[in-house]
Length: 211
Image (cartoon, rainbow, N blue to C red; front, side):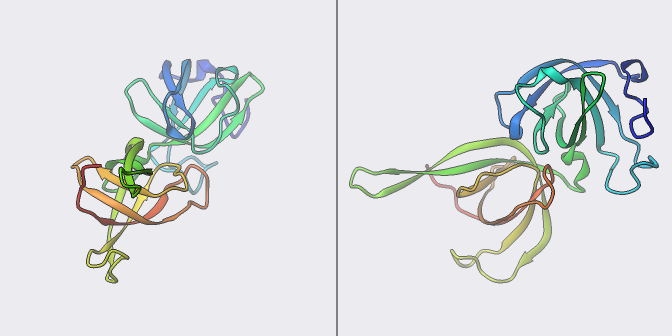
C-alpha cells in the first residue's frame, strides 16, 4: 500500500466487483471484463489538489484482461451503462491496472448526447460524387457553449457554435446528430491538449438530407 493509492487492495473497496465493457477509443465492439472494482474519487483528496472532479472515479481491473495496454481516451462502460473515459492508466505490483476515469456527461454543466457521423463519398450513376453519412460513435456526451460566431460559415448565413465533445475523433469530414435529431456540420476540430479530454468542435446547423 502506498500514499498515492491507499486502496490498492480489493478488500479496501466497499462497492464490490462489477462486469464492465472496455472499448478502445470508445468504439464497439468492446471487451467484457469481470471483477472490475470501482471507487469514486473525492474532490477534496489531498493528493489531487487540482484537476479532479466529483464525476471522477478509479477503476481496478485485472492487468491481463485487455488485449494490449490501456491508454487515455479509451472508454469503460459500467454495469449500469455509465460511460467512463480513461484519463490516466497505471499498473500495480499486484497485477491489476488502475484507471483514473471521468464521466464527462456528469462533468459537463448542461450535458447532451449526440451521434458522430463520418462522410463517405461514392460515385453516382453519372459519375458525380455522392456523399453518404455513416455512424462513427453513438450517444457521445457533448456540451454546447452559448457563445457563437457572428461570422457566417463557409456555407453562409448560419451561425457557428462551439461544442465540447467527449470522444476521440478521426481526421475525416464529420457531422453531429443530437438526441433531438438536429444535424450540425463540423467546420473545424481543435484536438485536446491532454488525451481523454474533450475536443472542441465548431459546428453549424444544416438541413437534413436523404443520404
